[in-house]
Image 1 (spheres, rainbow over the protein chains, first blue to last red):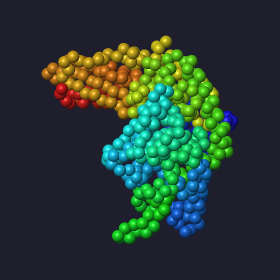
Image 2: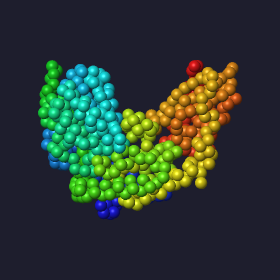
Image 3: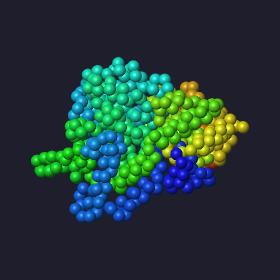
Image 4: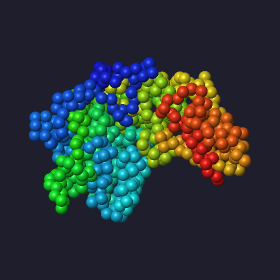
Length: 406
Length: 121
């Protein structure tokens, strides 16, 4: 990637405690290019109206802008526009499946398989609704190198398994489960597959036809877009089967005192005024990604990840978690500095302008498995450079110097 | 960096009042969901006086140092004194201002202490 792309991100003009910003927390949220910020601004400055309601000029424009983005999202992930439901983010998309589809498709005693790599947002809904509806929720264990236990998975697939919930890329370790193979195996027993693609969409091409999954959820803000907007993609027949998750305006066909008939998907799931500015920003984010293309972005991030892994591996006292190399992983690295709590590492790095995440990464069951309360997580975006990695390594040496008392 | 001064690092490396009190009369466990840390607090109280009080568990430098400094200052004082103690006073023991993001680290042991003294084993 050209170094000049950093200039497209206004945030990199910030100084953090007197240092340039070294942003290594893109898995939490990516920074936003000026093109996205101005697209959101332009919507509110020039086209603001409530989409799908106004007959006036602005209403027509706002509607067209939102529906254009639906087309762009569909093309971006290989789906059809009517399969694209705008949500507030990945969490809302997963909950829509959990509340809208699963209670109609699953009966008491049916099984849901949930991977232990999941973020709480693809874990807690199944645990909680499973208890409510008496589904059997089982967890796919994680083995060496942060990989899902493929043998356990195939041994636990049977006719009563109705749903498999799995991440495309683990937010905590970067692990990428072997998705097309898992989907094929699940489909053989008639199970549906929900993929959490929050950590994937900014880093590589996602094609729902190739993955062959049944639902896929992601967020705009982890792919250079604004916060508060996301997408649930679902197969047409499954969206038709699903009940609305929220009831309200613009999701109905006809409302009588005796009852209500609902609009077709995706409108059925988009009750209330949508985050139109956010949706427009998401469209701008897709356009921004497309000008570089995923082969360039992915190659750049893979090189950075490999470089960081190499630098970390020769730093004494650094314990890494997750896959050892760059194959089957996203641009995410989890580690600890021996003898130093992850929060202390993050705080010292922050004082040098290096932003990393420290904690359990909303994956407490996984942390329990790794037998650590927390880790330090470094994650990359298209704007990161080798210098960012060098600053991280210098910061980690400073951490070790402070804690060794020398 | 300012926060990691010798006093804090010293109490992190060699925490005072670490371990469990034998024959504890009061006990509480508090955990911090944000960082996954957990602290167990045990105390032996006789006629309102804190004869011994200790903490155990895993935490960052800030939380360990805060627990160490706090409990060190409390041996021989009274339960009534602890009831009067304000969070600000606990933060002051560290000797340097810590950002709001670390308050929960520094106060975890204090919360456990208050809970322990409010209950009897």
